[in-house]
Length: 109
Image (tube, rainbow, N blue to C red; front, side, top):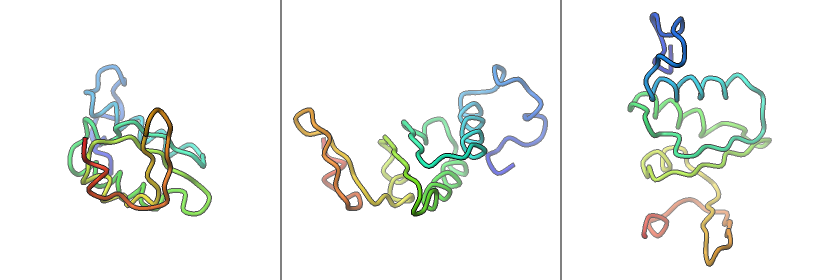
């Protein structure tokens, strides 16, 4: 399959899968459930390059005008590939949301 769960893997119990395979199962479950808001915390962790590319491609068009994706990630190339339209940062304990793409200052510590 597209998420790397082909062969005998769909027949195995989730408990017997690796961390990356479990993440792929979770992502496939999100794809099957109708929703207009998707919240992901470090979604590219434990995924191989092919799966990260598939996820970023799917998220770049997910929801379009009727949905939102909220992502917390330290993976700069993943974030650049998705092409987010808003950036949220925490400043003095307050969330500041800006309508813009990511830039270099977002990756400074």
